[in-house]
Amino acid sequence: MKKPAQAINRGNIMANKQFELNYKGQKINVKNDLICLTDFWKAVGRPKNKSAPQWLHRPQTTNFIMTLQSKIDESQVLIEKYDETGTFGHWQIALAYAKYLSTDLEMHMNEVYMRYQTGDVTLADQIADKAGPEAQEWLLKSIAKKVQRWLTIKPATKRIE
Image 1 (cartoon, rainbow, N blue to C red):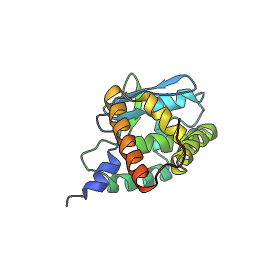
Image 2: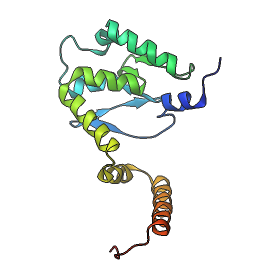
Image 3: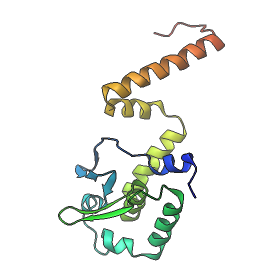
């Protein structure tokens, strides 16, 4: 049975996107749309008993992965081990692991999420700074359309400079 397109898209949000991640100066590698769990572990100081293989065997983790698998495209790889570089996982798995590893990292992710949910436009500006020229052009056109709609609905009473 094929899953609805919305569920597939939500699960495969990173598909074919080129980007870089880092935390506290530690580069977090990305390969084939999977994020390196081992790099998160290194970034928070290599805590004992919290390595990616150990975390992956926890019952809560197994439940999380099974739930994720039921919600995404079946063809997506969720976990992959690269001998020389570590364990890589789907972005949902990588973020769940990062939260498990470090309270500071969890709070950092929560802050970004709340900035998004509350409409903090400075987050949009930071995202635009990371975007390539094509994405920035798309964003500019999208914002221009929104401003034009806003101006036709609510005429400006004061000039914005």
